[in-house]
Structure formats: structure tokens, C-alpha cells
Image (tube, rainbow, N blue to C red):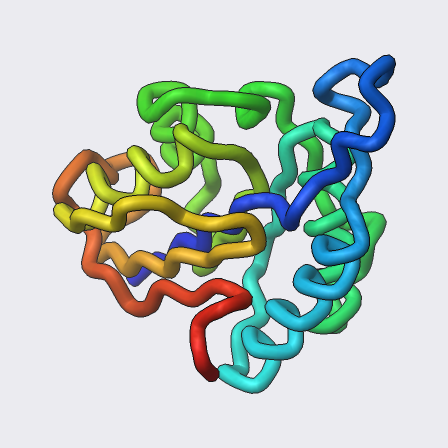
Length: 163
């Protein structure tokens, strides 16, 4: 049994229009929401084997904040450029490339890719994974055999959802 957590980056700042998209930081709300979502995961007893982030500053900072709450070592967070604004097929390849030793995987990235990917994997109809939102999906097979429709939605949480 494998578990995938898709985490959309927390709210980013648009205060610096000269910055490239990949360099946009979190805004105040994002800096508050990322650790809050990490606390919610910790309360559920969730500690993934592997965290992988998009190289975007806002995604990596979200990953670091959540890792801190989970007690996951920051230096073990991997960066994967294939996650940055990826579509479903690229995200599926990232997931399929994991080794069997990884029982639970947490990816940090972007919309619309994450919403489409979550829906395709679990045959769901989530309208939008909001910033700092988390979709957890369980699979009965190894990573390399995962395909669309194979997953079962475990939970969908986001900052404005009542805990």
C-alpha cells in the first residue's frame, strides 16, 4: 500500500513584479498557513518517507515549513524540476519513478496540475486544490504501476476548512 500527498504551495506574494515566477516568495498568509497545515498532518500522525518539491521558492518554502512541523529533516527534501508547473503526465512520471522503499510520498507543487492530477488518480471531482491544500491518495500497488483511476481519496484538507 502506497500513499501520495499532493500539497499545493502556500499563498505567494505578488509584491515584487520584477521577480521571475519561480522566485516569488510566500506572503504573510502563506507563512501562516504552511506551518498550520504541517501541524494538522502531524496531528494525524503523518510522516512521509520522502518529500519532493518543485524548485519554485514558494513551493520549497512550503515544503520546509511542513517538514519542520513533521520533524522531517530539511536536508532530505528533494527538488525535482519536473514538478514546476507540471501537467498530469509529468507528475505521473515523478510518482512512478519512486523506489518501493518509499511507502508514502509528499509532493509540493502547483495548480492547475495538482488539481487535475488528484482528480485523475482518484476519480474525484475536486474543483480546486487551494493554496496550502493537501490531497491524500492511497494505492494498492507499487509506484511504478500506478495509473489514473487507481487511487482512493483518503482526505482533502486546506487552511479554510474547519478542522
